[in-house]
Length: 125
Image (tube, rainbow, N blue to C red; front, side):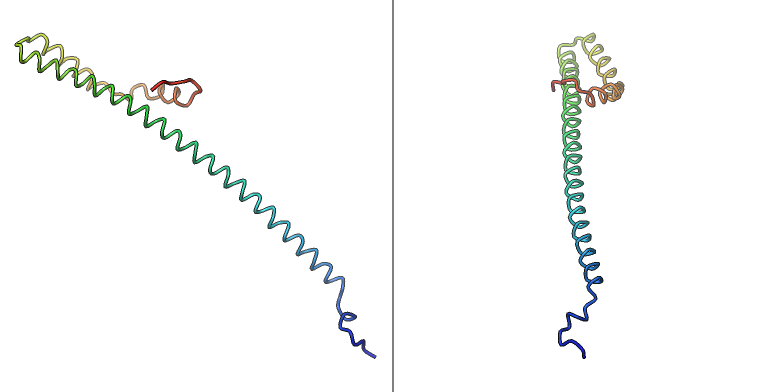
């Protein structure tokens, strides 16, 4: 006679294997969440480093071009003063200095600037 209980008909080894697979899946999900958290943290660190490097380069280039702007302004001031006072030598010297500055590139020492920015040296800007 058949048992009135369905539990007698349950394949227990299959259920044990199913629960084992469920436990494995839960563990893998947990491991994946830990790995995703680690990757997210590493990504945030990389993004912060990129932003910091960008800020440093921007400040360095702002400083370089501000210096050049100040020197260029000085040459134009000297040219104006020379013209106003009739001092031909002052005009010629200021124009020669201006021409030399304009033809020189602020990027000619870019490798040196880059190595300074990438190094651990303290750079005052």
